Length: 266
Image 1 (cartoon, one colour):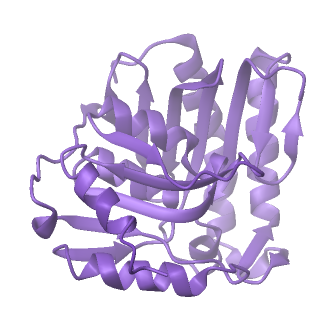
Image 2 (cartoon, rainbow, N blue to C red):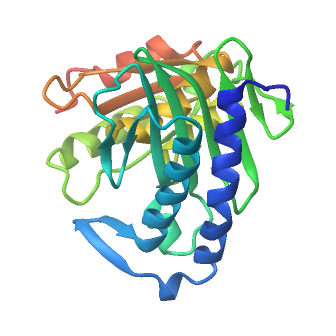
């Protein structure tokens, strides 16, 4: 891997260390303590354990940095110029059901911009890394987005609404409408990995509503450095950490945005 800045090396070390206990937990899912955060939304003892390891490792190097995490919220709130954005297990539902499609996702934000990020699936040993200006990598190989040019030929990936979503009908209508205009749509249950797979050309585009910043922070830089484009649509001014994300190979971006914005989707 050609990325060698102190920040990216720190992220790789932290994710690698946290993954060891996560792999053990994945092999003993039936023994994990599971709590419901809300309908269709769960937190496990593995989430908390993984997050704890990540925070400890990152704070050893930079105790002054701010942190935004899925489980613990905000740490060192006063530092908004340097922040780690952490999702200890992106794809918790998959993890809970023994589906090996989940990842540790951590991004580093400086002055409001994501500068580097890591998405690591410890089961498949796929580590996606990127830092601004130095490209994106999957393990030791450079990755690039696809060159698919026509929306009708595109293979997309998306995610469904959580159980507590108040816009389920809109999301399902949107899915049907877009599906009619592309080659096919897949759903795998991990926003971080979905974006990473767009970055390496497996998918041509990804869209999803009602995400959180920690779901996509690392994916933003990984996709951009692979030549893709990331956009937020219908931004939530009340909850800025909530995101509706559109991420593509850049070529089909405007066409996919037009499909999302079609007036007949209610």
